[in-house]
Length: 81
View 1 (cartoon, rainbow, N blue to C red):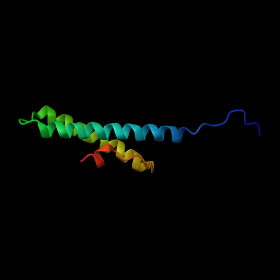
View 2 (cartoon, helix red, strand yellow):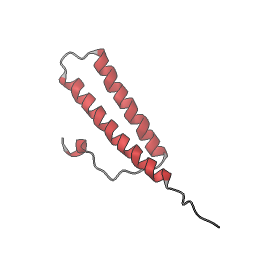
View 3 (cartoon, helix red, strand yellow):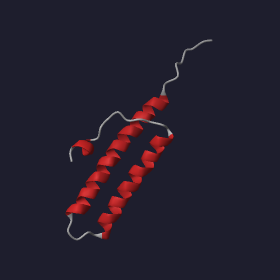
View 4 (cartoon, rainbow, N blue to C red):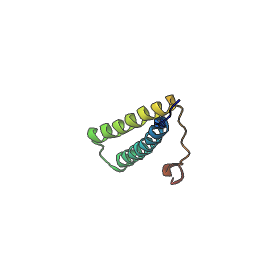
């Protein structure tokens, strides 16, 4: 009856934050892969950092898939090859 407080669209706001985080994690993972490829003698710590970046990205990717979020942003890693 009285709609003094209009409910905010929190889901849309947090979905946008999730997409931004996903893009940043993908960039971090790509950078870690490039670092691992550039180093001649790969240290186990470098491999662990690359694997950690991969796992972070994959976790956030699964969360985005569960929420059925679509991204309209093309990542630079796709066309910078």
